[in-house]
Every structure is written in C-alpha cells, then in structure tokens.
Image (cartoon, rainbow, N blue to C red):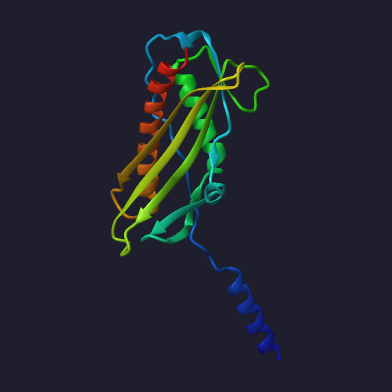
Length: 197
C-alpha cells in the first residue's frame, strides 16, 4: 500500500513539473522620424483617434496565414500588448516626433484640436506559402484627416506594403512588419504635412 501511495505522489509531482516553452513577446518599434519642412500645420493641433482594427487583430495573439485560407495563431509568440493600443501609441509618437503640428494628443485627451486623424488597419499579418518554406508580411492602412470644427473630411490616404521575410518564422515576420509600418509612417508624415491647411 505504501508503495502504491509513494508511486502516486511521485507521478503527481512529476506531472506538476511539466515545463512549457517560454512565450516570446514582440512589439513594434518606431524608427527615428524625419522632421517635415515648415508648413501651415505648425500652428495647428492634432488629435489621433484610436486605431480601428478588424476583430482578428484585437488581441495579443499573433496571427499568421498559410496558403490562401488557413489562419493560425503562434503558440510561443505573442504581441507585448494589444495591437490596437500598440499602433495607436506608435502613431501619436511618430507624429509628435515629426514636428508637423504644434501639438499632438491621443484620443484619451480631453483637449480640443483643429484636426482629427482617423486610421484603420486592414491588414497586419504574416503570410506563409502552402509548404511553409517562405513568407511575407502585408500591412494595409487607411488614414482620414478631419477638420474638427466643421466635421469635414480634408483628405484620405490608403497605403499597402508587402515585404518578404528573411526567414519563415515569427521573429522575421515581426522584423518585416516593423519595416513595413515605419515605411507607412514616413508616407503618413509627408501626406499629412501637405493635406492640412
């Protein structure tokens, strides 16, 4: 009886010490923004609305697509924070550093602004070939600049970037997503500097 009890406790303890691979968390990193030439926006204030994302991108899970139709989540990799917050914060930081406006605030601010920037992320995903031997990322974003006092659309822009990854894995996917996003942010700066009047 003692042997059975000892073996049962031993098996229980072994079961409790099962280890799982550590979860790797990734983030997007803003590259140094290039200051835009002096423009009429320099005396204006901008409020950046929360980024709109499709529902499959609204969690910390990192999604990827295999072939044409299969979508999965990485089991050992995830975003450090919800992409909705992550991308909203990166937009605000980028526009502050570009020095286009007198001030840039997030949607959380109670302060008024001359313009509001609305943005939506249609795609922010890594795609694998059917045999999973190669992959690329696709980032598609739309922007709308609104004159706050009149609630009128001043201008709109849509940008799509597709970049091949160095290797077919999560780390290379995140690196390529960062390159694509920073390229889009550069185009955003140039566009918004010309659009506000």
